[in-house]
Amino acid sequence: MERYWNEEMERMDRKSLETLQSYRLMRTVRRVYENVPLYRERMDAAGVKPEDIRSVADLHKLPFTYKQDLRDTYPYGMFAVPMNEVVRLHASSGTTGKKIVVGYTANDLDMWAECCARALTAAGADSNDFMHVSYGYGLFTGGLGLHGGAEKVGMTVIPVSTGNTKQQVTILKDFGSTYICCTPSYALNLAETMKEMGITKDEIQLRAGLFGAEPWTEEMRQDIEDKLGLKALDIYGLTEILGPGVAYECSAQTGMHINEDHFIAEIIDPDTGEVLPDGAQGELVFTCISKEAFPMLRYRTRDIVQLERGVCSCGRTFVKMKKPMGRSDDMLIIRGVNVFPSQIESVLLSLGNTAPYYQIIVDRVNNTDTFEIQVEISPEMFTDTVKNLEEQAKQIREAVHTTLGIQAKITLVEPKTIPRTEGKAVHVVDHRKLH
Image: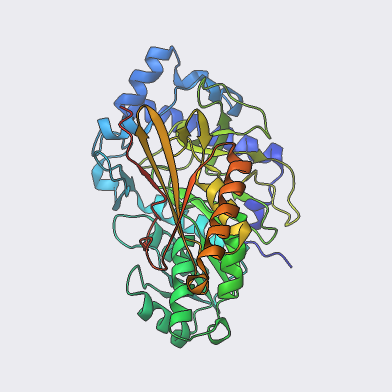
């Protein structure tokens, strides 16, 4: 039987939900217009006043917000409350340019914990469960975000954070962890370490895991479920909007429910900015309607997704977003073809003969793109004959060509050659000088 953390909200009828969204949107727009100079300038330039926004139907009149805006106003220029009302700061894990700095009031933190509590309850958790948090703590939003949600549910929280993978496996076994949250690539790292330590999935008590912070495929989900003996659920978030908990998967595992009482989602054409109809694939845009310290209006996430409306088999009425196929800024254009790392991952895992570790290496030689995929072979394959390995490489090459329509050089590398990460996996190395 499906359980809800906040059944009134999670199963609210569409008309009532849109009425609530419209009310919260109007209040938020007026507040940011009065308190955030960038929004006031943008709205004035577009000829839009707060009183022009009367309902969700007027959302398209508002200007977009971009990640660069947050860098240009670093550190606190986008905050909508005085700093003495901000009780916590987080920042993006971005490696280029200045960090994205976000703030939370006490009410914001409570709302965040509420969103994560919904995700955990949808995954079947309650106060009898033990939550092993393997997301990073600190400025990254993952660890503390799900920590707060787990405490709200009443779970026993084990704040392990990242690193020391062998010790994490021992804690999973000895402490009786029933839930885990981390990146999907780290979940596979844990499974690999368990195998090396001679610990089987029957010796740990994990029932479910909430995995996010990087794109992952259905094939990777199956791999995680098989190796850890749990139900693998998707959770979505981004620092600029909240952190984990913006959207979450239910037991149906057919997409993530967006917490629409707090966030309005749109899908746009990433090139033109035109709002697309439901079911169309495009760039996901979020508007925060209940956040106090750092509310974003029409923030362009760069994530490429589809939205699906209607009542889910779980009973929730919140719109569902399909698993992001990648980010528009992660998309590679190789010899004129659009390539997402998730497509490569899907091919490799569907073949099932290699380890789930790979790296795409792109370069430009004599004005022509070179495209290499380094694929780590499993320890079992390492003892294969050269002929078998050549056959394996050929099989991957043909499958990639069939999926993408372009040829790639396939290089099989020894076990443990591809770097392991505790956070987001680095799947692309692009040596081209494209700027």
